[in-house]
Length: 312
Image (cartoon, rainbow, N blue to C red; front, side):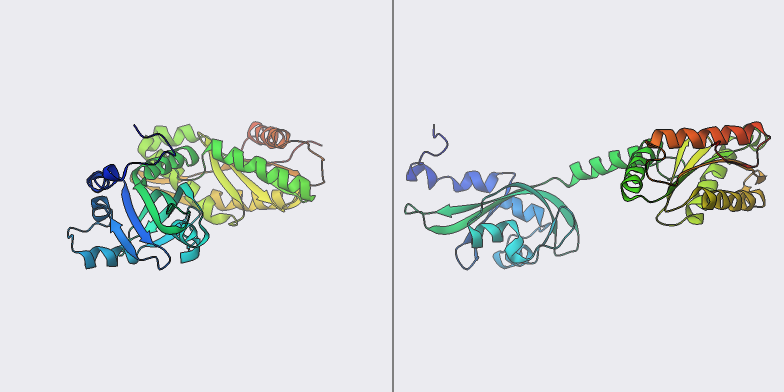
């Protein structure tokens, strides 16, 4: 058996094409220095979604493939895995990129590009090998979406919101900029479910979240903490400004009808506020969150439909 690095007998190598042809991995061989395709296997036909096996058709399809980095940046010929191997002699090992086919569809792949040299060490070709991981990426994306977004309202989940809130707090603290927190709770929501039904209640929560999403800036972070509690992170906002925003929001919601299949629902909310106004005044986001939560409890205990301000 041939060991890694050991030369393969030419008689064996000459009979390896059938193995390459039947491999599930896509394989293309580019001649150096022109980059002309001198070999491709049957998996390339399937990958390119071509039912034909005419040489001109598949060569055109391969040539029209556009490649993008994992972050979505277009890769020019010299920056592509095969280009780096062909022009720089670089070995590319299992790199994730995106291929855009002639029909506009995009596929995630893991690709390797290996310079092929003769017995004197002279570059004579580049072998490009890849396999499709699109389904895997789609599954990962679905998992991320389920973890990052609340399934009912479509806004950030508690876990993702807390993660982003911590980052925003640290950035504000390091830069010496203000950041504010609003915790919003719908007053007496159990009565909505009892009177209009749980389906109507779910619709109200969805529409409530949709309204708040459009009510805040694109730089603000908004998500559902759970139940009827939502949180907004407001970068560059002082406590005074946060209280004004909270009051404006509270009054709009108080006058806003929410339509459901079983009737029109009216809501009121209680809002707790807190803010980091000066650098290192509050050392952690957890303490900022607790201050906003305490302000919320005070608003609820005082009858609801009001904005709570943290005690100094």
